[in-house]
Image (tube, rainbow, N blue to C red; front, side):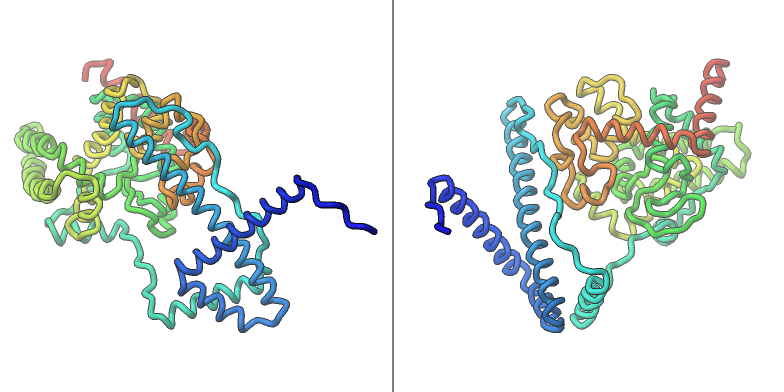
Length: 416
């Protein structure tokens, strides 16, 4: 059989394939160079394997390296587009749909290791980490850490009140600032699955109290430690004025008034700490990692201050949206600003961004950590938030919270 002559199209295809292979090999080389320790570990493990398993393992590593190379290229494009938009904003230019990445990250489609081999590879990596004296990851702080820090740093213990009363005070604060039950309860339903308690920390089941903290987010609106210090720095003097007025209110018993006066003084020290750092988000994040910063977070549990603190955060989102020309936010839109960050959430609601991939708005690790965010456009994420809220609104905590808002409505109607 004669070999068919090489056509121009065949030559072109061969050239393209050769180019792609070259890029993949270049990617493997770059990955090995960027992480030589990982390369040495995999090479050492490969030498322990019989030929058949070694072939499987090396094919897996090659496929993973090629995938990682493509993923890195994708996220570089996301970063470049972000920088482009930042430049346009700085120059006052309009942002269009073309300024966003429209596709989603590449998915790994290569071979997987057989279960037994994957288990041995994981064990080998763990043992290698041990030999290198790599410390285990430090656990994230939880409720006990916040309470301990508050007492050690400020002599403060939050005044705990029944959950139903906490919800009622929260509802009164929200209504007084123009937030609706529909908005607030839907945020609660999403953030806490409609089950959350005032002391719920992200990652801990609010009823069973099982799990481990996955962030410092706490309470009905799931404020981070940095949110707490940021809100105290902005609004702390108002909190102090209210506590002072309550301590002088003769409708309270003398014991309650004395307790409020003592609380005022301790909260004053906490606010002073929050305002001792420059009012920049990065500085609040750094402060949140310290004992003094963690101690502030216990305020979210206090029956007086906690509802004010959490509601003022949601109210800030409402005010920011109004200034941006969005007068009436839905619960899902408030949650989008809560989830992505206020400015980013507003950007995602703009027409140019509604069909853009959510990778444009979340850091790479946050994108993969938040399952609700993955493989969606901005519009699809809003719809998914609404859908989850609808489902969680039928859970006991959400039902109780909605009733608290109905009670406040009755109070307002009766002039109380």
